[in-house]
Image 1 (cartoon, helix red, strand yellow):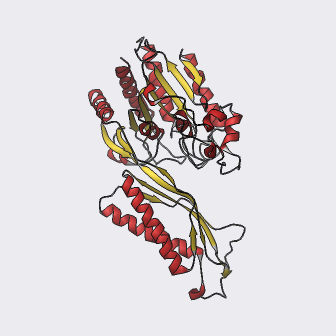
Image 2 (cartoon, one colour):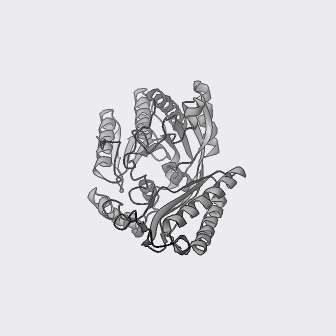
Image 3 (cartoon, rainbow, N blue to C red):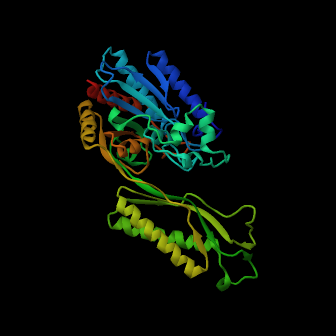
Length: 400
């Protein structure tokens, strides 16, 4: 359905994300579950409870991917949620609370430069400026894609919430681990203690002066590539020091490019565009490292005769998981005899939006080989079934 010849590509609010939703909806309906879509076109699968006025128990994840991503990022959590609801229904148990699966749209920031769009819309956290964001490859605004799928664009732009935090008893997200820890420890599952926050600059421009590569001596060059390289290595040295001091931090420059219309082997580059992402479990560390980043940019500017133009920073706070639910998932794994560990998530997830909104939130990680955001994601289906068992037990225990 989504194979692009290299990996899996389901564009945020695109045709293939919608097709994946339709597939999940058809499977849910075939098993007697209720299917609906909210105003941002998140898919909502429901197993009604005896008391519809009680806060509902929710699980879910996303179906969109990064370009040329893998099979399991997001989708594994949606499938686990569907399997959990089907298993509970097949048991013939009538829960007191309603159970819901949310297949959330637009989690990946790769498409519109903003993550967790479907989750944010649930709580009225989007506005008109968000809807004006252009998709990186087409230039079309998010508003146009929302209109294409029949979303209520006016209500979204006005920040009207779809649900209140008090409507949700708990949100539990199942997701592949996107790092190597569980694989290295030979553990099938992990209980997440919290989610790193981040500060991102999507488009920083370093401007020097283009010049002839042969005729311009080193001492007169204002080489943008060398300046960016200097900046990157300075920040890498700071990162190493912060890690040595016990800070939990990750620094990445995922995009660095000269202009292909101008760059040449015989030209001193006059302009470089690049990105910066800082991640940490501590809000003060994020802000402190970001201040250091701006200071080093100023120092490189003075040393190398260049300038750095920063776009607006996009910041997301760290999101601790509900400690009661961390303990509860831990106990469920122990009772089931499933080897597991507690760990933090350095990757962002929809669960962070729920936690920040004040919803009791938990996460369960599934072991995954070969990392994530690449075609080689490697989850074992047996591990998915273990996670589904724990998820179903957790939801049913809470629903009563």
